[in-house]
Length: 297
Image 1 (spheres, rainbow, N blue to C red):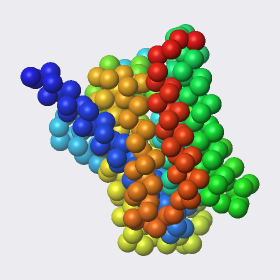
Image 2 (image 1 turned 30 degrees about the horizontal axis):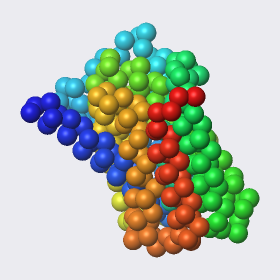
Image 3 (image 1 turned 90 degrees about the horizontal axis):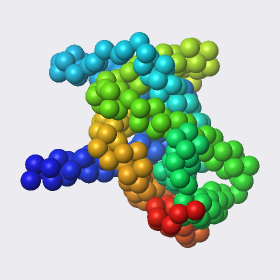
Image 4 (image 1 turned 45 degrees about the horizontal axis):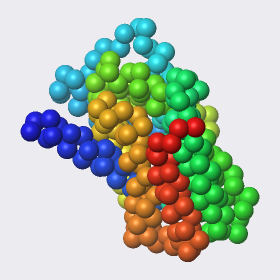
């Protein structure tokens, strides 16, 4: 009974992690439409998340000390995500909609077995290759059927795919560290080191343009929600799920993100999708499920 209860808690956590990430694309869109620059947005998000996690870990005494031999893995973890991931995702979302961004990000678990093959020499399945081909067709349908600005859509999509690549690197580091440190420790240092990466970029690129940004109530609320739910709670929930389910099984749940984002974007920011985009989204999700079939290559 206890085992079933623990399993239920893990599944609830991984579902809520992806719900919060589904919201995150809409919150980001709200902040960007207030002319908050991408690096300023992410730096503010990292500051709030680091302070919150620091206070929580101080209160609970849950923060573990990093061993010197593991420091390079934490540096790599934070370099992949939040630093490179958020740069690619946030700049990409200045060119494509929240839903398009989420559709591309949802392909992350599709490529996880490929990383396993290249780095861990794990077997690749025919279903994985077929799933990639099918999903890429769906992504192209979503990206190019909703806008006449083909060049901007393509550039934005490429940037978001950069986020997908860095997320795969993040998953490799998480898989190594998750059994050595608790979730609070992982997420705190991920945000703290990521903040160290972001601060020089903020002063070099965005600081002189702060006066042009509109820190409206909605924009500030969006940043706070991104910090609390998407950068803190979701990552803690995700780390817990990876520890018990593994990277691939935990990653499967992100298939629900595009649908959630489309619904949230429709109700919160009035985003409309064409019939071809809905069809493309369905093709992406179908390809993701095909990739989980077990026919060996």
